[in-house]
Length: 511
Ligand code: NGO
Image 1: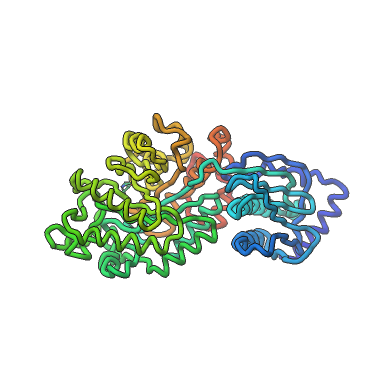
Image 2: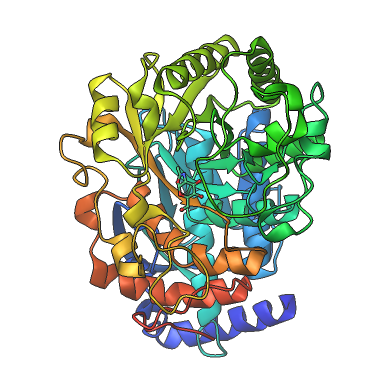
């Protein structure tokens, strides 16, 4: 491969002295970036990919290490070349500019250097992900007559929302640490930054709680359909958190309370009002289970669980669920959510909850996640809460694409690729505007999916659209344009062996 690069470089130099016309076909603004960048100014030149390119960064700053690792990995996988730490002919530089917003960056590609400018490591990382897409698209074009170059120019980019997430339900069906890491890679590639893990539900408890070991031993032993189940040890969870952090993604753990708790109730009879543990549940119904408000042990349980998980979660949020507690009395529901918010706060975290939590008094910084009731979301905003937008009819990754989809549910309607893309979080609910919104999240519930291929079929390509909705400004987004960029990402998804849904509405470009 390296010899091939040399030969191509040599050939292209000779070729270029005659005419550079064919190289200039690939102007920077023609690269089909997802999410689309704020501004792109092409300058018409070329940066040659060759051996011996170096990296220039502040070696005294140890926090930049994951950024450098990400750059080296991206470079190696797209060019098959290694980057050098020493001085060299061309250089990739990291330049600090404190005037830029948190995740904002500039990527300046010149003939002899590439500069990534940002105020934070997050910003450098997002810039590297843009560079990685450019590298992959350009390497795919490489032929004998078109050498591997990057078109020169300046990309200036900035996130619209600070929360751009996805959720995996690992309770209805369990997914391994390796599956989660693979999903994290893909989220990071498209500049998403929060992964919400739905760690408990009626069908399975998926995280080790050392003070309540039966939660996983018994409560994690099965899943929807009666299969084997599974759970993360705290060591596994730390590994996921660390892998996510390496990709500038924050984990949001969720323990669903007070409903969706059959797995816990089945593991400990003392948590039940009648002292009798129900059997494990492997069906798909919701709304039948509830913790028992009259027992003090219930609150000891909540305290222990939240404390153990909060201790190994560096991110700011703890999600307490709160959805579909149909078998909890209204006044009991209030007591649960009040106590849960208090415990979360005592453990140094900010509460997140599904939109139903608006029926209680929210703590000043509590975040409500809008999924089905506009009225709930509006009431949460009236209490001063910020909203994470996950409207079921637009952003639920588990909805079928159409009536022919072999996987997924349809209670919120079909969500084809266009319907999932073509909406604006700031206008979808009356009275909820940009300033009320923390960001967007695309949840993937796992009643119907059993492995990574199933997961991919529902998540891709729709996840790319949610990544763009969260990152790009609304006026930059237009379906026809997105559709043609998405078509080009078919090549990348194929290369990554992702079992994406080949929507017939997209003219997929494949290899
Ligand atoms: C609902 C429900 C979940 C289901 C999901 C299926 C919320 C917040 N609660 O969303 O238990 O799995 O729909 O789409």
